[in-house]
Image 1 (cartoon, rainbow, N blue to C red):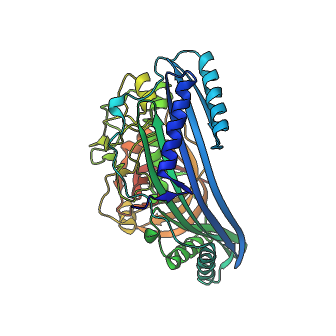
Image 2: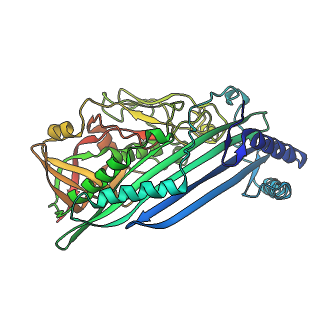
Image 3: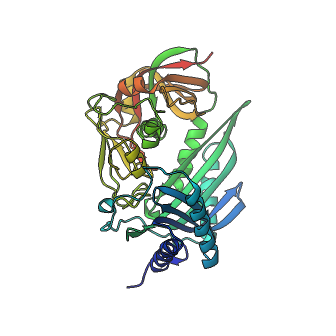
Length: 447
């Protein structure tokens, strides 16, 4: 069998490199050590107004080393794979560890939790596309989009990128794991004009398997439709109304939830969901779980950044918080057990209904459809939420006109409790999979 080569490296080469680093750390006096190695290779092209604007090749590699002297630790990072550079990096980490204070929660994961028998996941699908082919596809995408409507007067470019990578983790408990991933993307951003009004919007597709990418024609059409539909946007007067977050923006609502139940924010007491285990967070019809071994999932991984085996986790069941999201260190600080989430959640799913977005608009009747959010107005300590937004005003379940220059505000705890329904229009272009989310009410601030 021919061994898979990703990013210019073979699995054998990288596993050998990790083993040698761990051995050198032991020789320099470390009682334990762990190593992360990442290597990726790919290219991206951007076309604008029919001309090639950029072609970028990249081949990156990084080694992160952490050594332990009992309960003291030190870390170093480098991108140089030469033996002498690695030796000096290990030496630097060891010098740091010798002079740091002891931390009773530091150290490797328990050997019993390491992913010694991790599954081989279907995550690597290299794209045989050439730079020349990517340029032609980008030109085609942009040309179709520009020709869609005479009000589309300019382009911010059409782009294609492809990347293949290795993720490697090893530690002195005898575990070395490695898995390959690929990621391919295509996007198109346009500018439309009517009178003095100008609007910008885009569409994109991303997948680990190029066969799952949305077609050039569809990306062009989606980008054009979205851009033109934003023309002649109005501002709303201040009011309290039902709000639908379109699926691609609804991901953020769940992302804030996951951040609030992440171990580092809990042990630092900087989360509004501190001490909420066993309490209702969402309505009883909502459950949220993760599926880390999903074939071709953009968030799939056989083990986390601690080398701990990933597993399906249920965070919300029937609206009630069942589990936090923990890595080894945070779990020890909280006197709990790791959930295999040192690097965050893997393929998060929420209970969805049967309604596509048009039917969800009918359910809402009158309110705001949010399709773009701006700013970072989230207070994780108390859950206060305030962000700039744009979208569409809805009456009788139908879009009436686009809106812009508004702010939506609320509190995440109230927003989660008042979640009415999740649409069936699930967006799969990320680690969080959700449909559009209808909330009972939010404050909309405008004129």
